Image (tube, rainbow, N blue to C red; front, top):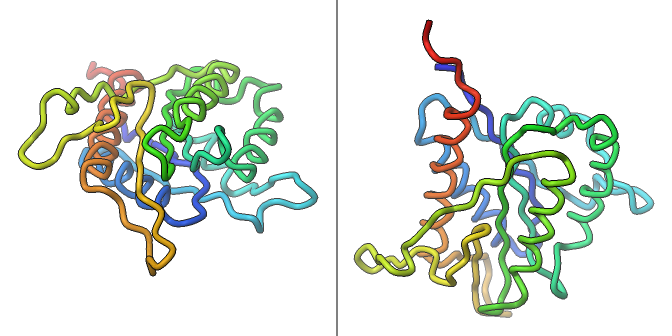
Length: 202
């Protein structure tokens, strides 16, 4: 079976999106034939408002699937992610990501927090690149497993995470249900990359 590559490109300020990205990668790596690369967007990659990281760009180009992640700030993706997305217009000119798979995840303090708008933004970004969007297909909201109710916010376009604001917290923590939602999404992405890109045996 061909090894599939999933690139998870994301911005994380408080660390919550970092935890979500790691859980998605964990789920993807449960498939022994899947490589998952964590690509964190940082301020150091942005100069005069323009993002650039040639090594990260090369990893994205080699990936079969790209997952977009950002906290939801003021109803949309963070400015740091937007700088990356604006850079991707260079790839769009050549349709370099066409026919790759895509997905998305976001986190905010509010139960709603307009997180859906961020996921819609990600899906439009993927559509402009000619990518095929993969949704979580997570019905855990209606079918809880023990004490864990995945997809607890009923999000079907992408994965949503939520944590209450805690100014005294020393490090980020992710709700167990949100973490499991991410893990399951990573595993689903791994299965889809094999379904689409693996070469059947002769």
